Length: 526
Image 1 (cartoon, one colour):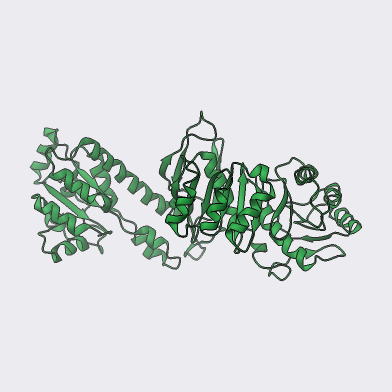
Image 2 (cartoon, helix red, strand yellow):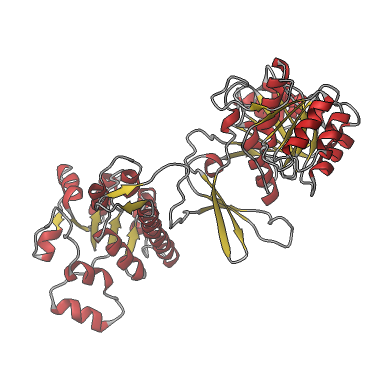
């Protein structure tokens, strides 16, 4: 039995190689891998001794040779294949243990010179992996150190590795090379050539490259899609957020649960102070801040307790004991938070609601700055909408909203307007949102006209909007919406502005004694 080893990720390599050697396996290796094995006293045949050619061009050429690929690709059940390699003195290779140059790590360095980046494109490695995968019935291909122990066990067992294991490793190997090539293609999609012949890489959240290929790995099948007759699955695209979430308890998550959890997390992350969100059908029915997470949650829940029943909760702080007690005090479907404090005690409290799905995920360092969705026969990709203009305190933020009415907002109104604007951006348009300084009061979401959105919100509030402020995700096309929210009791409004009827709307605000500010930025959410 002969094994070819050539790995960039050397974790677990030596222990695995020792197991192979103990099974009587002859080790063939290249460059740094051969050195790592030799230092440990393992007998290693260098690939150059197999091919009869030295490694050349700084290692660009070392395994691209018939004595390597012939040994990998020879089919053991084909006498003509075996005769061909025998005629040329080629020994069969039974195991290929290869993982590839660390291109992704190189690509993560924004200032790495282009020529250095190109040198991290592996050529021989993918060729060997693909060859071994193609001949998986006769050759074991191993690309993941996590598989070393079970491969060693299978080799030591009577009868050797099963066909199902060989096929599993083959699929994993091809997925490995596919992901590798995808990373290269996506990275080079960010590069353009200047008239002077320089290669410049455009990075940043506003970059939409000509080639965008997300890498997705299935985490689990879902119970179903949006409806029971639809299939659904949850895929990971990275190492943060929902790609690395932990489900601590509860029923299986559904497609709609995850959409709602995402909507809840997006709003909660807009706040630095303790914040809680209650979501129904991707729209918030309650959002609030508080001195504690528990206080924020209770305020959010009580903003619309009827709609909050069976809702999805998002928190921007870890779940503590008080919050856990508040969560189990009513029926909710799921909760997402960045963590759990006093985990054993908190989970014991949450276990009182065994069907409650409890999910934790860290969104720190989330690299993906794009949102995508499918349309019939195509995909739409956009940079993520961030409410950056409300990141700092109003009215003294770097991007200060422009007061357009005779009356400017009071200090309390400024605080409430900033709260409202951060939430409004995440509600389906057309959106009208009534709030106080630390909680939503009424949500008019997803209406076909803006004045209808006002009416829906007023209806939901049942007349409790005196002294509130309002956020509108886009401009008021006519003054009727402004008249309606003033009649409901609002005293200040934040909106993007930009309508041809802005003058009429401003005049209406002045007539009602409202303060109104324009942000100059729209936040539609479809």
